[in-house]
Structures are given as C-alpha cells and as structure tokens.
Amino acid sequence: MSEQGWREFLAAEGVDDWVVLHGGATAVFQVPSLGEAAQLAEAVAQLPGFEGSGALITIADGQLTVRLARGVFRLEESHAAVARAVSAVARELGAVAERGAAQEVQLAVAAKPDAVDVGFWRAVLGYAPLDVDNAVDPLGHGSTVWIQELEPAKPLRHAMHVDVSVAREHVEARLAAALEAGGRIVDDADAPVGWILADRAGNRVCITSWPDGPVPPSWGIGEAALPE
Image (tube, rainbow, N blue to C red; front, top):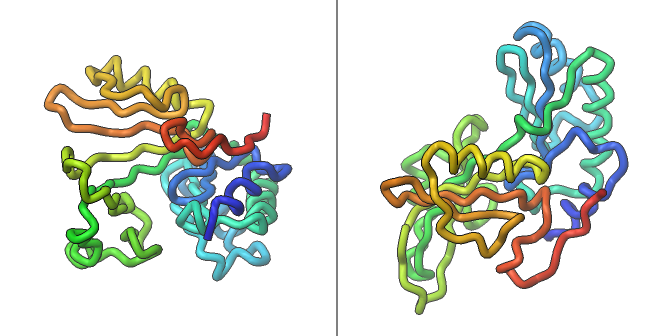
C-alpha cells in the first residue's frame, strides 16, 4: 500500500467522473428515480471484475454512489479500468456524474502512541478494520474512524476532529459555505489545498481536496501529479 496507486489512478485517462477521497475513488451518478438508480446498480454489479473487488454501491432516490477500494492507499492503477467501465455503463443508461456530490467524512481521534485504542472504536461502533489505524463501517453508511498518532512530546488538544475530503475543484466552495454558516479559519497553512476551521464553540474540522488534489504544503513532501 502506497501513494503510487492513487497517483496513477488520478493520472489515468477516462476517469474524469471520479474523485479520489480518503475512502478511495468515488463517483456519484444522478438519475431520475430510485428505480433507475437500482437498474444502474445492477448493471454496474455485472461488470467483469467488479464483484469481489471490494467496491461499495449505495443507492438513494435519484442517485447512485460507487466507491472503489474503500481506502485511498488500497487504490491501484488497475481500478482505473473498472472506473471507466462503470462510467460507460452510466452514460449508456443516461446517468450524469456529479463530482461536486462526492465527499468523504472521517472522524480523526488523536492519541499518543501508548494510548492508541483503535480496538475500542471498532468494538463500540461495530466497525471492521481496513488498516491497522482505522475502523470502517461494514455497511458503508457511517464515517471512517482514523487514529491519528501524535508525537509523545506534542501536547494533546482537540482529541477528536472531523476530516472532510472533497473534489479539488469544489474545496474552495465548501470553505466559503462553511464560513458563511458561521465558521472561522483556525489554520490556513495548507491553503489552497486545505484549511482547519472551527465552529463558534471551538469544535474543529479539516476541509481538504487531498487526495484528489495536491499534498498539503505542511506535509513537506511535494505535490501529487494531477491532471490538468
């Protein structure tokens, strides 16, 4: 598991419908009705290589969401072929991809190395492990819980916060909406890739275009190669 897979996916041809989020590559297709969303889901499920791939389909009234790999670091270049096939079927059935509707909400729990307790969160939520530092909803409905391990000398503040991952071309609109709704910027060191915001009570949330956009500057590891 590494960054190579999702970087190669982003650089692949024919994946413009897809947004690479914390939870892997995601596409949201708009359709006129719940019944047509179910029809599209059936067609997608029958695509070669889709069953058993770890993908997740969510059907809603007038909308179908397809997630590949469930985790960004499990995304591989080979998923691009699956993504292209899904998009082709969607177009054939008249569905329209909406990148602005794709998002991933994640709960980050900060802990010192000797207090990492991911097993507790899996047990209390009824979640399953995807990687050693997280817990995922087996139904795909709830937010992923990620344990953010802190350096021992770093003071522990805001032991929980929410991470919101959106498409790179929509991150500034999401920021503007949050500010208009009363939020405030706490840290803009990663702008225009991401921001740390807070509500009036001081509860924090990170809005970011990573991994669909460049690596946040504060990470100091350079930017991901992105399509123009």
